[in-house]
Image (cartoon, rainbow, N blue to C red):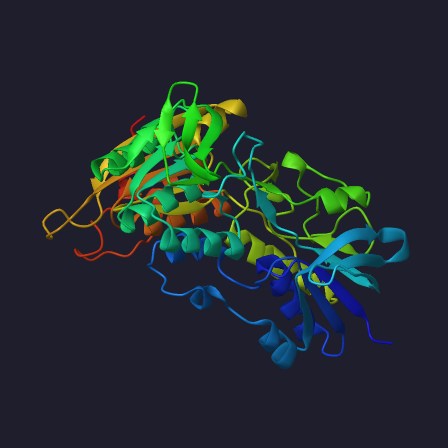
Length: 449
């Protein structure tokens, strides 16, 4: 008899796994259930769709349900929610959200790829028209529709993290008056304060208002429409409010099935993406991620990791042998005219782990000083005080941030010391670099200590 693989979730991790299973199991039956209306699309591109940089939603869609069915023989069910996992019976209960009917499907092997959900507090007024979270394509299309059909001149974004700052740029691109509110004393909370301040400067220099240490009390409105955000210190008028204060894993389904959870309530998996229940795997934004520098499980939901975990889970489900090597916390974002990149541990994280450390911070240029149009790079490296192994890095600048942060991410993966950075054979030509790359310049400064 043909084996049946059931996948809960039709985005990055789920469909990466499904495609990999098909390669390894040409005759298997593969069923994928997606609660939303779109599958296999680039969630990270949603701010750029709303801001008009990406012209149409279809540009973000990698494959349609028809392509999966016709080309890969993967049966995809859109607007179908798995409401219960029955591990003892190797079965799931699925609700057709269009018809309201429920049906039972058996499986030989199951993947939970339910992703995460936007944190959306129970503030008074959260149900007003014009108030939105942003997590999936449906959210993006609702925001886009509101902006196009309604008179929107003032936008308030609650949350100054990755999505909040990318959406601040998107609304600025649409020529809206934008304010960013954050409960914390800084934006870009995963960065150290002095690096985050560079992002705040960029926002404010472009006319985006930043209000920190702001605790939301309620969302206010008239005639069912939002008119602003009330905080403990004042009122911020708005025609549109975006709530972007982070995401949490969709792990309730797994929890109810007796599957073990880990940090931040994400599904605990081993390096082959297996849960504690036989024949059940988990991957993506619903699962934990091993952090190579912390040497512990973590939760860092990113599209790159979801695709990687999905492929590894699919390989193992299909009979192969693949292992998830873990993450080092690499991320990058564009804030108007600057890029902010980070990898490894921040100074705050190092302190929390009680690791003895040293810091080196420099200002350099993205290419040779005599070559025209060079831009400043702010670079910060952390390394272990005793064994001098790299612990993390943060870089902010207009050009060349991605190149350098990826070099350091690779060095972290390999366990290099701060001093070994000087030995790397990095590319050089005046339009691209100095004879000594800024990463190596920082290593040289650290070598003097």
